[in-house]
Length: 267
Image (cartoon, rainbow, N blue to C red):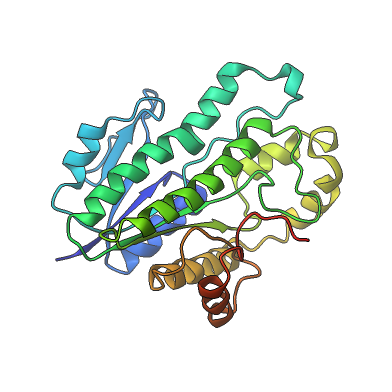
């Protein structure tokens, strides 16, 4: 039976690349995208259009029924408004959290049940952003909703991984990948906001933008995806596409020391 990979957020950027990449490897790829009344293109048979603020579980379960799901890749993202916290709004936070965190919690539960139907196990991978794991600054003071939602997602992944480990009948690992800088619409929006909103990293971001090699960065990400999908014992971790390239070292540390590759204070 053909293996299925589910990817959310495939209309552009990383999600679009991963859609084409796994299709080229002859996987059955099901994409989940945001319903947009203005969109002229009708969804194909392998695309599910949803409202991220109100997940239609019945629709998704019906579309995924009898699929041999081996992986879920969450590329859906909403950066929200780039603004001072006092000019921000509840509705902005709500819309960002709906896409980046709340819907992903619901989708994870649906995907896990569908993966577990065939008892062979699988992998779930999210992507961080908004300075959630970046250094040396790691502050996105004007990307409030985006940064906070991504930090929440990281903690959700760790919590869920431990719960799945306690439930021995679930052979599923769940992790986060920090993808590094990519030439995307989101990064362009951040740069266009100017130094006032980008802070100390503006000059560095602006200088590096032209030199970003998306193809090279995508290859690093796919290598890490492949590694995590074949190492089910590694779960609840945050791995960096640019730095975590010694896979043997990662496997050794992850299995021996629980706090490695997590958000922990270093003494």
